[in-house]
Amino acid sequence: MYLCAILTAAGVPLPLVPVLLELLAIACTYLLTFRLYGGVEALWAGFLLATCPATWFVSQHIWIDSMLVFSVSLALLAADWAAERATPRAYALAGGVFALSFLSKTTGALVLPAMVALALRRDASALAPRKLLAAAAAATVPCFGWIALLRIANGQWLPSAFPTVEMMRRYPFVASIVARPWHYYASNLLLFAPVFVLALLRLRARDRRDLGPAICAVTFFTGLTVFGLMHGGYQTRYIAPAYPALAVLAGAAVAQLPPAGAIVAAALVAYGSVGAAEYAVFRTPRFADLRASVAEQFIALFR
Image (cartoon, rainbow, N blue to C red; front, side, top):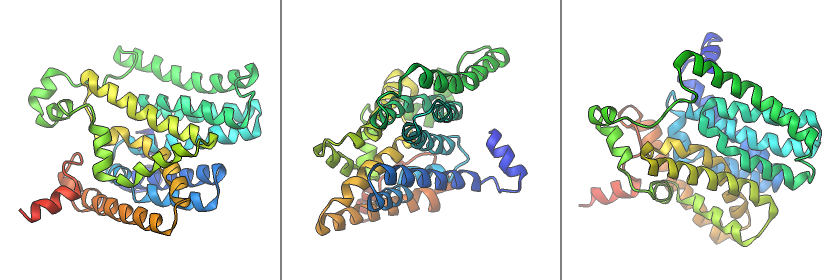
């Protein structure tokens, strides 16, 4: 909200704010992949995130989720950079970026395990007292300051995103997202962005470089699924912060494929891009979530 106020005061049209944040997330994903793997992998990762239906969808709405996608991708990059510098000052900066993720949305805290994994890969002493204290101080001050203000202003420690019975009664869409199946995020991935399933190919490599992005993706998918099981609801935008990490892994996997495999990957990207255009451009005003995959719509044409 504050970022939108600052940018709009500077003359940036409000609808462009999430678009700019999406572009920044793509840049962070490219840089992280370049640092972990190399140029070819980085190009694929940036391309995959740029054509991702979920992040396209988020970037076309004035939602805080676009800020969260950017801050999570920046946090991963900051952790890897801090480990390379291996100084308390660098870790303090990474801690500040973690705070940005948390302040964007409380689920941003889920990026922390991946940040730790990325830091330990380059710097075995990442958890040394001085470095840990620097990162913790930079993260704790803004996070706890915001929590204290929230408590004073609203009488609650953290904002609650759990729909009430009254909300579900008044708004059918809210009731529908609570009633979705537990596998919603996994099936959503298969239906709308199947190219990211190629990230699973990286499991065969058993490469330490994959650990941080893999932890990030698994943590967000698992954490938001648990949130749904607790009747918090399932929405495509909730899981959007996992896609930069999936793009890193899938980009690294695609770069190693033979020409035939790369063609298959490009076909999957094209399929996802059609969905991205459908829900992020053509039907943006009418849809609050991704309700039917492109495959389902094609099937419906021939019925």
